[in-house]
Amino acid sequence: MAFTIPEGLHQDLYPLAWLVGTWRGKGQGEYPSTQPFTFEQEVTFNHDGRPFLTYFSRSWLVQEGSDELIPAAQETGFWRVKPNNVLEVILAHNTGIAEGWVGRFDVAKIQLVMDQGYSAPSAKLVTGGTRLYGLVEGELFFAYDMEAQGHQLQAHIWSTMERVVV
Image (cartoon, rainbow, N blue to C red; front, side, top):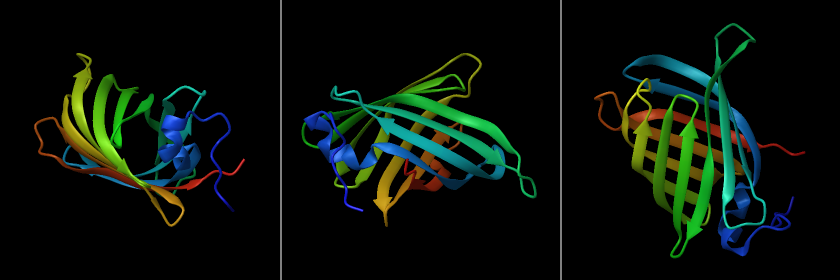
């Protein structure tokens, strides 16, 4: 199937056109404050013709031996392309955290570093992070390394998602 630029996509977003759509898949997670876990994830990138992508991600915890999925993390935000392949991302999470990310993209590889964060008084304190998004053999690969709750920057979650064809 040939890739085409989505209709009405702002020309600033052409380098990220491959992201537009919905992706679903499974992933793994771990952190010193949690047991290792498996999750399902759905990510949607969309646009309305202006020079930013809208982003929504939701996930469900998978319980071994059960078909039941438990609602887990959600985040929503905006991705803005800037000159020289710079990307600015603003995210808000259902857990009471908001973050600003800055990074670079190169064809189908995106690397982001947390620039600033805010945690509501009842939320965990996230002090740093890196994110990697990439198109690998037609699938969206995602990895998030996190620095939080007094722990050093380390692997937290990673997933591989297939494009959902509507």
